[in-house]
Image (tube, rainbow, N blue to C red):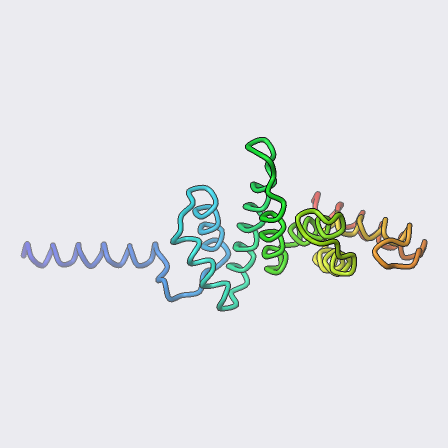
Amino acid sequence: MKRLLAATALLALVAVAAVATRPFWLAPDAAQAQSWLHAAADRRDAQAEASLVRWSGRGNAAARRAHAALLAHRAVRALDAAKSAPDLARAAALMGQAAEGGDAPAMFLYANMLRAGQGVARDDARALALYQAAADADYAPAMQALTIAYRYGELGLQADASQSRLMDHEAAEALAHAAN
C-alpha cells in the first residue's frame, strides 16, 4: 500500500512539473521568450541566450524579437559613457544585428548611427531604409525623422511639404496610439 501511495505521489509530482514547464522541443511563446530575454540580459544566462539564438534561427517570431531586444540592450550598454569611453564600433555592430532582427527602436537607433557615421561608415540610403522599416512598424520617432527628412530634402529625398505633413500626422497618430 505504501509503495502504491509513493508511486501515485511521484506520478502526480511529475505531472505537475510537466504542466509547469515547457519541454525544450516546443517552440517558445512570447512569455517564454521574454523570460529568456530577462535571464540573458539580467543574469547573463548563457543557456537562455542560446535558446533565443536557436529559436530565432528556426524562425520563431517571439524569440527573434526577444533576441533583437537583447542585442539592442547590449548596444546601449556599449554606448554607456559613464563606465568608460563608448565603444561605437561594437555598439553599431550590435545595433545592426538587432535592427536585422526586426526591433523597431534598434532600426531607428542604427539609422541614426548610419546617418551620423558613428561607429560605422555613413550611409544615408541604408539609414532611410531603416527609418522607413521602423516607421512601417509604427515607431513614432522614425516617423518624425522621416518628417524632417521630407521637410528639408535629406537622406537623398526631395523636399516634399505634403509628404512631410503626412509623416508628421502619422507620427502623431502613433504617439497617441502608444499612449493608450
